[in-house]
Amino acid sequence: MIKYILKRLILLIPLLFGITLFAFFLLNALPGDPVLGLVGERANPDVIEGIRKEIGMDKGFIRQYIGYLKLLSHGDFGRSYYTNREVLTDIAMKFPNTMRLAFASMFIAVPSGIVLGFISAYKRGRFIDRFINMVSIASLSIPVFWSAIIIMLFLSLKLKLFPPSGTGDIRFLALPAFVLSIPAMATLSRVTRTAVLDILKMPYINTARAKGLPLIKISFVHVLKNAIIPIITIIGLDFGSYLNGAVVTETIFGWDGIGRFTMDGIIKRDYPVIMGCIIFGTVVFVFVNLITDIIYHYLDPRIRLHEKSE
Image (tube, rainbow, N blue to C red):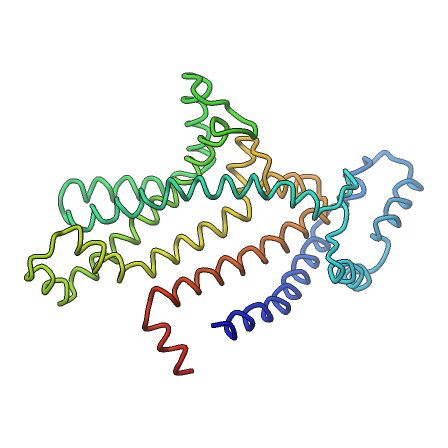
C-alpha cells in the first residue's frame, strides 16, 4: 500500500506540469488584457507598459511559463495583481472556510442520501420509491443558483430565519451547506438505490433471510458492506469538488472561501489567483482520490487480492 501511495504522489508531478501548462496557455490565449483591467483603458501608456514589465507580461509565453515554474518550485504561487498579497497566503486563509462548508454539506447529504436510497430500494415500485426518485431527479435538474436564490428569498428575506450572506457561525453556514447538499443527496440516493438493488439479488441475501436474520442486520452487515464502493466513490468526488470551492454557492451566499476567491480572480482576470486556485484544486483532488482508494483497499478484500497479484 505504501508503494501505491508513493506511486500516486510521484504521478502528481507530471499531472501538475500538464495542468499548469494547459491553464497557462488558456489564460494567455483568451482575449483581453489583465493590465488594462487593472488600470483602465484610459491610463497613460507608459504606466501600462511599466505594470506589464513589473508583472512579467512583457515577456513571451515560454519565458513567462518558465518563470512561473521557478516560482512554483519554491512553493511560491505568486502575488495577486490587485492586492499584491501572496496567493498561497490567501488560499491558506480561505481554505478553512471552504472545509467547514464542505464538511457541513456532506454531513447533511451522506446519511440522508444513503437512507433515502435504502428506503427506495426496499420499497421498489411503490409510491415512496417513485416519490424519492421524482424528488431526486428534480433536485439534480434544478440549477444550484436557482435553488440558492429561492431558499435565500424564503428563509432569509421573508422569514428572516438565517442571514442572507456572509461568513460566520452556524447561522451563516446553514443555508449554503443545505443548498450544496441537495445535488449530493440526490446523487447518493440514486447510486445507493441501484447498488442495494444489485446486492438484494445475491443468493447470500436469500440465505441470510432464510436464517431469520433481522432486516437491520442484513442491511448493515450484508447489504451496505457490499454496496459501499460506489457510494464511497460518489462521496469522494463530491467532497473533492466541494473542497475546491463551490463557486456558485459561495458567491451567492457571500461565503469567504476558495470558490468565491476563484470567482473574484476570474472576474478581475487576476492570473496568479486563477493559477493558484487551479493548482491547489488539483492537489486537493489527488489527495481526496488517494484517500478514497485507501478506503477501498480496507473495505473490499477483492481489491487487496488484486493488488497482491500485481
